[in-house]
Length: 205
Ligand code: GRF
Image (cartoon, rainbow, N blue to C red; front, top):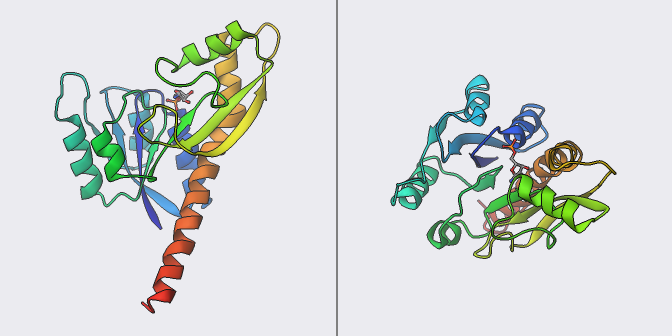
């Protein structure tokens, strides 16, 4: 079973999708900590309601954020870090320490509408401004390029006439993000378990 850390900055609906999947036994992993980069966000209430340990490590005015986050992840023996609506950019130090062990959900079909400055409603505004008829969500590994890591899962969502950034954001969450994020986590947990079992068998441990 993998130890999962979920990093959040806001409402935490993607965190909720992960909690629900874990509680339903769809993920062979446990959420051992929820970390927010700001206090008072609703995502932390969700962690409290489900008895999941949580903490706030602020990024604002905190030059030690990366060191504190790394220490926290190590303390909790975290195997997989999930960025679920996490708005801060992680340093190379953190990304390198957890290479191919950090994933992110982005509310567009990468490589469209992604990279620096594309977050929250801005992503959906950009999709509407461009006039695309299909958008969606992507779960990908996190590397040193913003939204540039290997893609794990994607799901398309139709844009409807009369959509606003808000209505499109809601549909992309409901029809894509809340589905593919838990699926991607389940897939990684399964693959890591198989790899671990194989290593144990090879080494006869
Ligand atoms: C989601 O659209 C996510 O893809 C984006 O920010 C939003 C956060 O939603 N990065 P929530 O906090 O999970 O409700």
